Image (cartoon, rainbow, N blue to C red; front, side, top):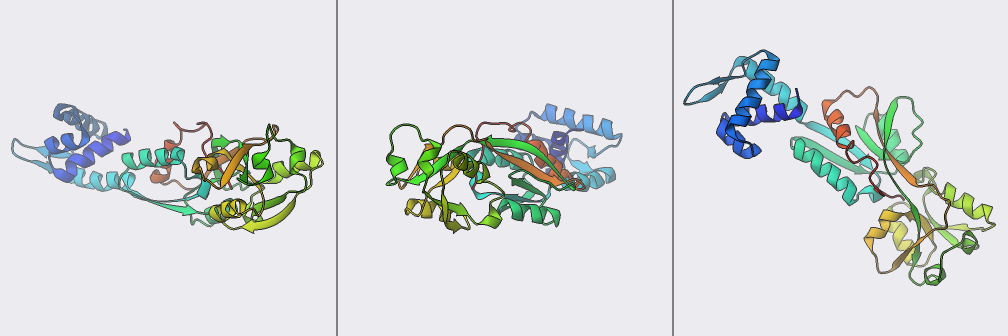
Length: 285
C-alpha cells in the first residue's frame, strides 16, 4: 500500500463521487476506480457500495477512512535556524504539504542548542541543527552543507581590499558573534585558522538573532564569518567575501527522537531524501 492509495480513497470517500475525486486528483475516472479496487483487494474488504446512482461507504470503509485520515493528517512541530529558511527548505516544505495538505506544520525559529533541548523534552518532532548531536535518544541524518564566507560593512577595509583575503588580514579585527549560548561551536574553525596564522581578534558585540547580527556588521561594529546563503539577502550595506581556503563546510542535520513512531514524522523525513546533499542549502549563524 502506498500513500497515494490513501489519498485516492479519502478523496472519493469525502465526496462520495469517483468523478469529482478524479477531477480533483487530475486522474481519469477509470484509473482512479482501478486504484481504489486494488486497495480493496489488498485490504481484502469492500470499502464502497457502488450503484448506478450513488456511492456509499461500507462499514469497513468508514472505519478505514478514520485510519487513513490519521495517517495523512496530524501536527508536526519543526525547529530550525532562522538562516536556513532558504529556497531549498521552502521547496521541501511545499512538496511535503502538497502531499499531505491536512498536516498542521508549525515552525520554530530557534538556535541549535535550544532546538536540542526541546527535542529531548518532546516539545519538537524534528529539528534542523548543526552537528554534533551527541544524544543517544536522538536519530539524525545529514541534509546539506554550505561554505563559510565573511560578512563585512561595505565601508570596511576588508570589503575594499583587492585580491583574495588571507588569514593574517583579520589581525586586530573586532568580531561580531551570536551569543555564546546560541553558537553551537560555529565560530571555532574560523578562530582556529586565524590563531594558527597569528591573527588575533576580539569579540566586540554579541547578538541574539540573525537580523541583529547583520545590523551590527553593517553598522561597522565588526566582522563575522557566516555561510554562503546569507549572501542571498543582497543587502546594500553589506559585502560578503570569500574566506581563505581551509575551513570545513558547515553542515546541517535533521534530528528526531528514536522512539517517535508518528507516521506524519515518517512522511516528513522521507521528504528530505530527494533533496539531501543539494548544494549549499543553508546557513548559520
